Image (cartoon, rainbow, N blue to C red):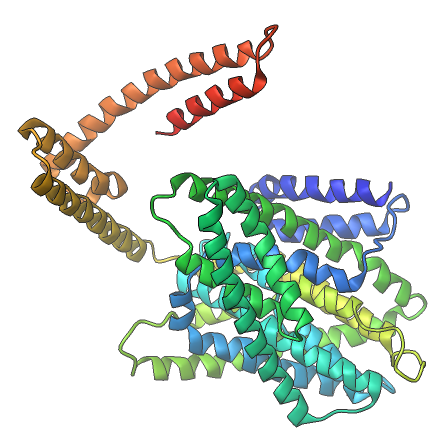
Length: 528
């Protein structure tokens, strides 16, 4: 099997892991990691030869962009305090604790190398958090905080990692310089993200065609990441800024085709790239296996100790941080999405899985320092890091569904229904208001006006049938049943039309382009 065939296996596995995972009750990313691990120990599978410095730029931008599409800037702003406590403070505390323990238990490990180890395994993976936790029906406030933590903690961790690696390679370190690098990295990233977001928004208006707009949306996160990194900024933060800007300002309410096609496109990209990313985590096990040759007991002990530190520090930090957030939350004038019980705090604790970013950073550790000597204890750092990644991802990923079910942590369905009902009422009122404006300008027949008023009402009741009175609900159900029958008959008619047009594609002299254009017209008609 060559590298290209291996890539196709991972892509196929990414698709199959979704239905298989749903049937087995196992998160798809965990299945892909296990698949990669099995492939890593198979003799016929080649070792992956991807340059470590290309893993993050290739995989992270589309995954971050896809994740941000599911949220909004206002949601981040409302959860700024809990996200800060997790994404910045907890990453820093975890790095320090891991560095202290690693420096103490690994003989001869320099403090700079220990800090690099702490920085690369400190951030929980944004993809793992959203892919695993998002499938479990958790309360939206928990998913929002986990998404925010996962999206922003890489910014802190990657900057700290580069500072530590520079110190280990050059032998020089300065705390003021490290703080300045962090600030400058964030400023450059935000500036690049806003500039590219603004430019992409203008360019999308110029392109107009949905296909071209969606193609541009795939290029933008890569451009944002690469440009920010070239200017010594945070590529991760730049992608987040660009994606949030486009989600806020590049949405046209009437651009239905672009929105539907874009949603489908990014669902496909998210599924495939996530599968490949976690498959690579499993495939990279061969590095750890090669390192541990003859030293399994010693290295496994170190990895277990660091894993215990990572897991315990998260729990010991979350307990007081959640308590403090609740105390401060009581003084706020607006709702802030925070854990409301110890059960939700436990679920947040157990959701701290490591993944793609940690793998990319550990593989990017240089082989030599500036004086030509080998990077201190690089093999040991690689093994410990992979031990933490596999332990947290597989162990926590496999047991998180059981823990969520055991603790009874579920989404507040009543609150979600109330919000949906409120949106349905607002949508219906907006349609009725627009109808009144049209009636003031145009002279509508009474029959047409009444028909349009019923349709305006139906807009809301189709979203949430509970908003209507009993009599109107029954009338709506009767109309819905009739409409369902009409649509069924119309669907069969359109199906016959599509079969006939598609059959014409094989006839002598038929122009496939014209056939496809007519077929596309019928497809769009079928969606109405």
